[in-house]
Structure formats: structure tokens, C-alpha cells
Image 1 (cartoon, rainbow, N blue to C red):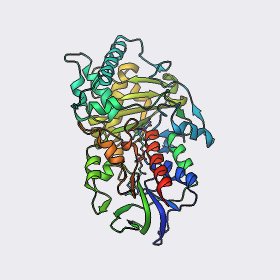
Image 2 (image 1 turned 90 degrees about the vertical axis):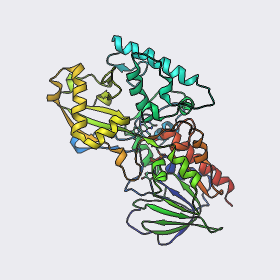
Image 3 (image 1 turned 60 degrees about the horizontal axis):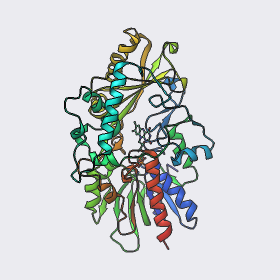
Image 4 (image 1 turned 30 degrees about the vertical axis):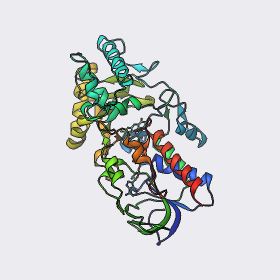
Length: 421
Ligand SMILES: Cc1cc2nc3c(=O)[nH]c(=O)nc-3n(C[C@H](O)[C@H](O)[C@H](O)COP(=O)(O)OP(=O)(O)OC[C@H]3O[C@@H](n4cnc5c(N)ncnc54)[C@H](O)[C@@H]3O)c2cc1C
């Protein structure tokens, strides 16, 4: 459903945002309460949000994920089972950076040293039990020669520089047991395919939610008004914090929570290779072990003739602003370290994500500013048992992931299923 208006309709439950959380909520509600009418309202012209699979012509139609790509905590990740249930293929090849994966410089002295430094950093994070929160940068070991590497690692995890994000929040992060797996057809394909039985209105930005009346809520959208008895708001924290949806009466605690849980930035650049035989398949490489501003490079994922470069934090913001040419030049300079200067002759830029400027998302995944980790529960709590909040930022331990987002959608749907007459 995309072109039509909402015809001033009325439903039991309106869900805002067709990302992993909104789709999960809709499917669970359909299963638990087929007697309820529901609609999923999506501002953009597609389903999936930050789960977005493309088949770019300039890459010969191969599958790429612009947003989430890895089933983290794959053994207990709900999307693993869903992908198989809907006939997609879960690939269990170890992630190239993991045990058993192909880390190109695994045995180099620098790579060994940073593994130890990273292990010690994570031990300090997990041992962090002060009631007073601190920035992650406070957990750096003074004078450690690998602190630049730890900075880079921190940006990949949170999308933000270490001094911006909370140590307590990071100590709570737990994507669940299991390795990282992938879906051959793309993570975005899983979410979009799973949404097939849900009535979705795309191109339907919700701009205002009036919950002043006792017996109904009025949603003002780009396609007219809709009345609902309950609403699940499953949009990103940057959308909420920017007040792209206004609430009447206002709910300042939610807006404040969202603004303290902003989205960090991670972007991907896909490079095409002219001579694929020059590169190993499904291998991984870090651009630099000595700079906090480095890309991470996945070589020939699934054997395809591409490199997937990953940038995060301030570097990602800079490269997004400067454009695909700058991101390509940056990557090539880093890849020369391993593949020699001629590498620039066999690579060319193809596709790049720009998540900071995605109008209905505004970044990649949420982090907590120091002192704000508990606000994840504040954001997740229902308001007046009629406005429910979902989305990755509402998860205390699995924030920043697509399965964490799904679980928050399920929680909202289950509460509504239990409480709605
Ligand atoms: C580059 C990158 C790499 C990542 N890698 C991984 C990974 O490997 N594994 C992993 O698990 N996670 C990863 N993530 C994170 C993961 O993609 C997200 O955590 C998850 O997809 C968020 O889902 P969500 O439903 O919370 O929000 P979203 O996906 O943001 O969905 C919200 C939806 O709401 C819509 N919307 C916004 N405003 C309105 C409005 N006013 N009216 C109607 N609709 C609106 C948006 O268009 C969007 O479709 C990655 C993200 C990025 C960007």
C-alpha cells in the first residue's frame, strides 16, 4: 500500500516505523490477537529501516546490506529462525574477524598486540561496577601504545568516540550467545519478507500524535488522519529527539531519554574490484593498527568481487560529508599498506551508505551518553498504557542490533495483546 490515503480510518493498533522493531511487533500482534485491526505506517518508500538490502546494477546485482548485515548472537537471534522459516539461507561461515575466520594479518605482531589490548579493555568494561558512570575513554590504560586502536574499536561498537559514550551502558551490552552469521539474501531481505502479511502504508510519515482524548488517539500523517486505541512508536531516537513527531500533550521524559541515547554513525562503502583473484575471499583486514581513524575492510564477502569498507564515529561523519570519492581515496590509501600502490588501479567506488543524512533515521545505532544508560528503560516504558515505545534503543542489553529491536517490538505487542479488551 503506498499511493492511497488513509481515508480517515480507525484501527485498534497503529504501529509507526517498519524497521525490525515495527515489523516484529506487527507480526506478533497478528499472531496473538487476530481479532485486533492494525496498520503499520512507514514514512519512507520501503520496509526495513536500517535493515536494507540492495542489488546494485553497478555491482552486477549481487546482494549487499547497507545497514545491518550480521546476525549477532546468531544461535539465539530471532531473525536466524525467521530467515530459515521464510525460506532464506543462513550462512554459518565464521565471521572473518572471529575465531576460525580469515583475519588476513592474524599472525602479524601488531594484530597479536591489539588483540591483547582489546581483551584487557573489554575486561575493564565488564568489571566496571562503579555507581558513578564514566565515559569509555576513562577505561583506557594510561600510556598504552594501542590506545589509538582501542579508540577505533570503540567507534565501531558505538558509532561514537570513546569520550561520548557510557561505560555502564557498554558493560550491559550482550547480544546473546552464539557467533555472527549472515543471510545469503541479505538481512534487509529477511525483515522486508517477514513483513509481507502486514498491512503497511509506505510514504506515510506520522507528524503528530494527539493522545488528549480518553478513548482514542489521533495520528496526523502525510496521508491524512487515523484514529487508534493504542500506538507503538518504533522510530529511531534521533527522529524522536528532533521532535519530527510531536505529541499532544507533550511527553518530555521520552524526548529527553531519546536525546541522551543518540545514534552513533557507521557507514559502509562498497568497492568494486577488477581483478578479484588478487584478493582472498571472505577475509578481513584493519586499515591501520595505529590510528583511531581507520576503516575496517571485508574482502570478497561470499566470494563476490567487492570490498566492504566500514567507517564509524567522527571519521564516518567526515567521509559522509565529503562524499563517496573521499571515502574511496581514504580506503585505497589504507589498502595500499597491504596490497601495494597498484591496488588503486584495480578498485573503484560503487555504493556508499549515508545513514546520518537518511531523513527518517538520522544515524546508525544508539549509544548512551555517560550517565544515560538507565534511560533505555525510561524510553521503553509505556505511557498511559496507550503509547508504547520500541526500537533498538529500548533494549537494555541488545541495543544497536536488529534482533534487539525485534525483541522490543515483541514486548510492546505482547503487552497490548494482554491488556487490550
Ligand atoms: C551500517 C550499519 C551496520 C549495522 N550492522 C548491524 C549488524 O551487523 N547486526 C545488527 O544486528 N545490527 C546492525 N546494525 C543496527 C541495526 O540495523 C539496527 O539496530 C536496527 O535495524 C534498528 O531497527 P529499528 O526497528 O529499531 O529502527 P529502524 O530500522 O530505524 O526503523 C524505524 C523506521 O521508522 C521509520 N520512521 C521514522 N520516522 C517515521 C515517522 N515519523 N512516521 C513513520 N515512519 C517513520 C523509518 O523510516 C524506519 O523505517 C547496523 C546498522 C547500520 C546503519
